[in-house]
Length: 373
Image 1: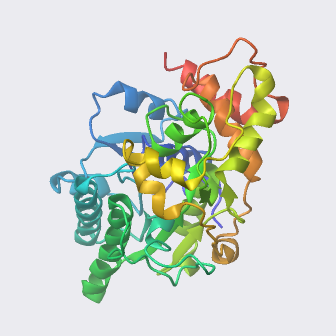
Image 2: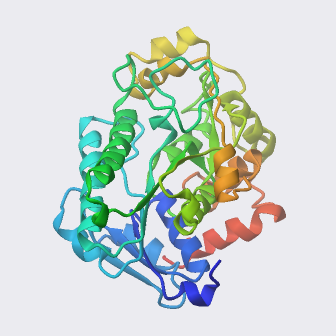
């Protein structure tokens, strides 16, 4: 495997570099010695640009403008790059049909620019477990051979967007003449948690804020999710990029087993109840969530998943990528401490600060955040 000095000759494009996952990809690749070109929609948006710029300590990061729905910007964005990590994609808590168009057209615009350029060795595409297990009975352990049935009742627009965008990516690659083809690997992460480099609203950040605020979540819904640490997701992208044995593969990235929302709340309550945070103690029954769904779109979208345990097989990510997953409880707590330190969650009067075991990661992120101000 190349050392950091050799990596300095390699330029990697990271789309959506100001996002939750994208920013961690930037940080990791810079740490590994790569040169990074990141895309943002507007260089004038300092709220998004500055948190990424501060990751660059020695001039190996450049930022360029590119919009997922504007094909013209991608030819310039990919020029001179050897690899592309296509991380950019909408991830709202409740998605409209525009989310589907953005995901599909954005993916194709990037891939078309890569094919036209002809010098890109590989693309790593961020998909989701939502493209794997939705729209079908949850009575089995899902792996990369499974695909979501988007025609099934209750499949939401976000799930459709990730499934269709990934299918279009594979179909596009297959449609190219052999001389135009490039290597493609797809990463399918589950619900991403962990410390934040950015404070921009995302589904994950919104969720941890709700858990920590009793007024927003007085009781946990009977939901089960597979979590994964954002640092493991970034590592998965890097390893997929530089390991040729992953070419042509889709790879689930998930900490196993999955976890119930009540257990996430229990982990947070054990750590933060004595620090002035009121965290839900009870699990809401189905009928309560059902009633609430008439007034809340997020509750409505969760109904098909209530009381359903989700099981994923993450063996391929361990075998092909060499991933060693973070402990899930640590991931949950580091995300909460990160959110508090960065002001996403209000500091209570009894807050004791970041425990020593988490300080290296959390204080580093907070230092980056404070240096932007």
